[in-house]
Figure 1: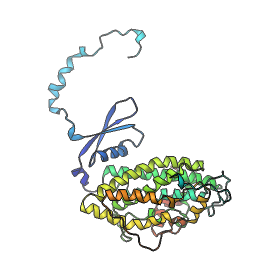
Figure 2: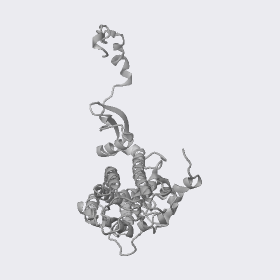
Figure 3: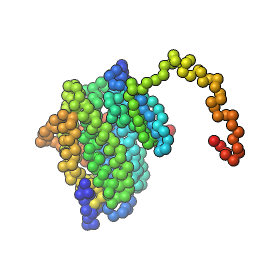
Figure 4: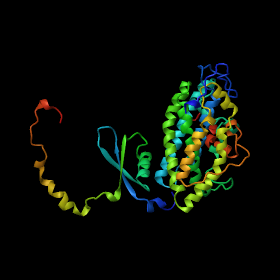
Length: 100
Length: 291
């Protein structure tokens, strides 16, 4: 791949989500450059499902994803650090219930 | 396309691999094709697979590089199944490896179209001369034929061939989808991309005449009732090709009356032996080498 491929400059980025089998949720597995949704779907098939990873693919324009800011980490996530009572770890689980 | 499978004719010699690469001929069931016909299909797949693999690591973009490598691997996979079956029918010492690596160019039965370099015109050998438009147009012309060929062959009375065809059809459909998509994107794209696709089409289209000129090995195979009569697919192929070309705003070139290539009869362009030299060199330098 010599120089910078035009695709990297001109084609939008897409996020790829793969469902590994029926009944499971789609999981984010990576991203790629493609000219439009149809091409993104085919490229996702070629790049991310070569080893039978999936039965369904979603592609989403990366620009359409609104993400939290790393700078917001303190107010977004840290307040939860000392609220261990939100974890259901204070219940006694009867043996008959088995693994949960 | 049911009509593509000719009716079986018991009177005809149905199984002789007339000029099989090595002696011996295993008996096989009524309505099965000879080894030569399997070699024709296998050589098509292997030669195009090897040719397209030249893009591996050199693709126009990363995603497309992987896509083309996948297509090559599909083709090589088809070739392996066909060589394995051909080797069973030839018997003796034949294996998929002897068939792929130890036959010379005149023994290969692929269409000439598939051995041509990735460039328009017949001169220029620099890596930078290769043009993806030729790759895509060839995949389109061949892929649109093979979707029809595999579709017909999956109903063949030759069960081993029918099974290979059913598997290959799914791959061929994707190859055609990939190629058609690019035909339209680039044909109906920029001035530059349109001009390149048109040049590739003008260059390659004459070689498709070989599809319709029945060779001796094809006549023998069709006579068994287990092969596809490719000229019977021509109307459907024309319609499919014309539809995509129209959408791609490409002009179908008029074909010159003249020489029709005969790669499937072993008469090849000079390009095949270079391709084979690269592909076979290692196996011939180190016979029986293993990973």
